[in-house]
Length: 190
Image (cartoon, rainbow, N blue to C red; front, side, top):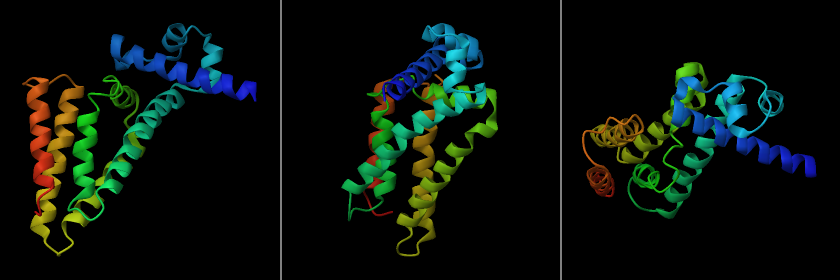
């Protein structure tokens, strides 16, 4: 049992180190050697937990999704009976990302910089959310409502991506205000 606990702790420490390397040195600098050095481990210690760079980067993405995805599902469950619960939850959780470790989304960049194919789980997650958003908006068979919900969803995802890339042309207060406006629109029947 002690061995498993140490391995899990090592895994988290390695993922923390990989994230730190991605943030401080750039996503392209995430390597087994740089992560081992940052984690204070040997390269063999990293390889024990992540047998390849692809496995390490996939682990970074999985950890990000294990934070983000359940939050959307949990928040959506609290909105039972309201309109557009998934859409509202996406906005809510994107707003929460500022309160979480702000560097978590760097895992996505590290993944994309190394191998875009490793983003497949994230693409599947985005397809699931897109499908949920459209289905919830078309309960009355209203395609225009589905398109409006899709535009709102894409706007929020775009804000998040611009923020992660450091490309927002406005401050954080304005980003928060825009997200709140999107969330307010999602609370209305489209």
